[in-house]
Amino acid sequence: MFVHALLLVLGSRKGQAQPVPPIDPKLAAMYFQELQWASDQEGGKLWGVPLAGPIMFVELGSRAIAANQADGEGKLTLRDGVWVGKLPLEMFPANTAVDWAKKRWTMVVWNWLDSEYAERTRLLAHECFHRIQDDLGLPPGRERNAHLNHYEGRLWLRFEWRALESALTSDGKARDQAVRDALLFRAVRRLLVPGSAKQEDRMEMHEGLAEYTGLMLRGTASHETRMYLADEIHGRDAKGGSSLPTSFYYTTGPAYGLLLDAYKILWRKGLTPSNSLSDVLAVKTAFKVGGDVMREAQGRTRIYDGRTLVDQEHGIEKERVRRFTDVKKRFVDGPILTIHDLSLNFSYDPNDVFPVDEFGNFYNHLGLSGDWGYVDATKGARLSADFQTAYLAVSPGASADAGEGWTLHLNPDWKLVPGARKGDWAIEKG
Image 1: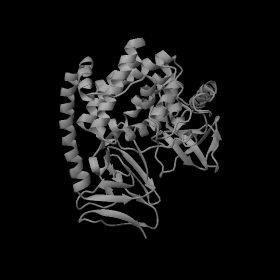
Image 2: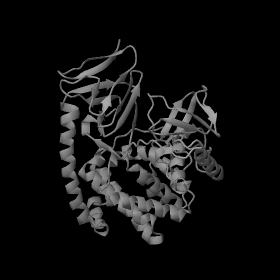
Image 3: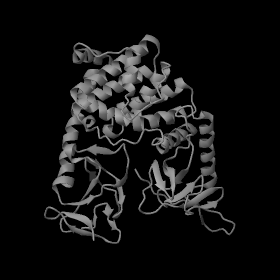
Image 4: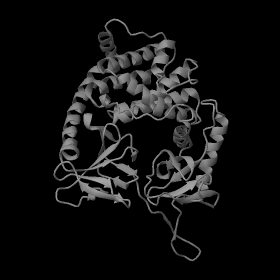
């Protein structure tokens, strides 16, 4: 959720209220230094290159920037030890890697930085991985994994979660068995949903490796790091999971990475986007799928409170169907503004995404920009399955350039035109 804040301090020398900078430069400088120290201590052992590099903090309300170095176009000014400026309106504050002013940056939202060192460093290191992943031959993926929004996918993922939690908090034979259970539950899900293995693995090689990197730099001993991740998995499972297609990899990816480390398996060199962390672990632990996999898996679910989980997932599936009907009515069947852009840039919360089957994904809050202009949809928008077309709900009879929670900002030479259906709109150049 985006947060807006105006910070004031009282008691200046003249007795008048003075505005506080949106980003405290001394605090920002300290965070930059801490990240540099963590990167220096890591020394490139994970990926062969330093993690620290150009990084900017952006404050949501003011869009103020505080960076650790100058940009390549002179847009930032050195002040109080950090480089300051303002994020352009066509760019959206987000935790991501971004090209701006002739540099590749790690961008992190200032408002979302934790005051606790380990959590803050985990996030910063995670986002630093995204800045270097292209250079590592591990470019970002955009697999939707929509099957994880349906009953079978959700159910077997949550069983896998429970087994991974047990594996991360155990050792010896207990860990071996929990690892086998996790791989077994994963195998069942992938048999039930053809093609899901490739989709899941691709995102674990993207966001999963980023989160693994963050965990490795958070400054805790290996067993404490595993306990931390196990607690994260437990918390997500206890809440029933949310937006699993766009968030599962934050848990499963690093879990398999940490377990590979626990078994002292060398696995990080020579990775490609098509690799599978779970397959590597399966080979190294001699796990093989054989016989009646479904029957074996169903037998093992009893260890993980299977009956209760099945009942819970039936209820979640009913709610999914209800929400699907509502989103389809408003953002597919109803009047819409269509924005088609092959190079569409967008910003969103991966923990707040709802797949709408063949109609793509629905986002409660979605920032969009391109050569045509920009729009910040704070009350919902839909992206096509190929991520190249956006759809905004238009109120019947209302202005075509605005709707509930959004206002369209078009650049010169772009205009609104009637869409394919009565009441629909689109944009085109000219």
